[in-house]
Image (tube, rainbow, N blue to C red; front, top):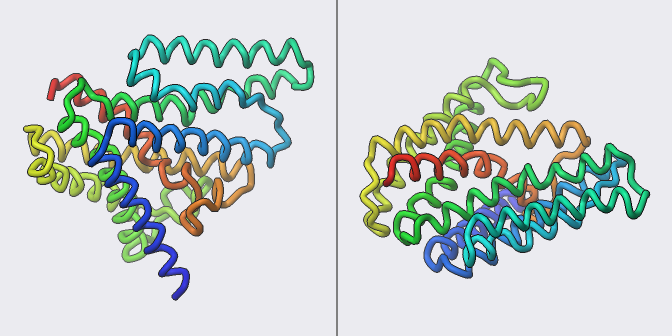
Length: 271
């Protein structure tokens, strides 16, 4: 019973955080996503420790600390310069300290690609074209589509799952669960459409359904990729920040993979 209550408590906290992001936006979302990125770097660092790697994480922390603020204030060019600064100090560490092997230096760049470049995509969506309502609908899509996909994937897997989907990576995932995940993403597209009564943005229903189906697929790839790292490092969860729900990367693995496609669709379609 306590485990069930803990799940509801954590889910409630996450829903409140998302509500704060959607409703207040601005600097509130900047602070929350910046903290999320910093914690993600910390969690990834702990995972790499299990493989006796010694990456130089200062560059990743520098980027995680400043990416959203710089994007909000100065745009993408400033974020690119921050990325280059992070890359340069990471390369300089290899020469100046001599305490890391070449493999450690290469590993230092992992966090800049995953998860930080995906967090940048979330920032680009959150500040989308200076249009508050469209940014809320796009941001809600990033979260609702893969997360509802995760929920229905779990439900379909428990009810109908027999054939394994990727047993070498995640033994509990099934083909039925994968189908449920895609269906859940499409269903979330319908829910996001009706949320336009709160945030009027005139995004077509068909576009949101198709985007939801795509996110239902991509979200599962994000989940599986995060699982490959956990399997490689021999950990169950990236952290215990949310108790049985794991850490930030455990909660956002599917969300992160959907951020680039949501931004691309909104940008290309001009919605």
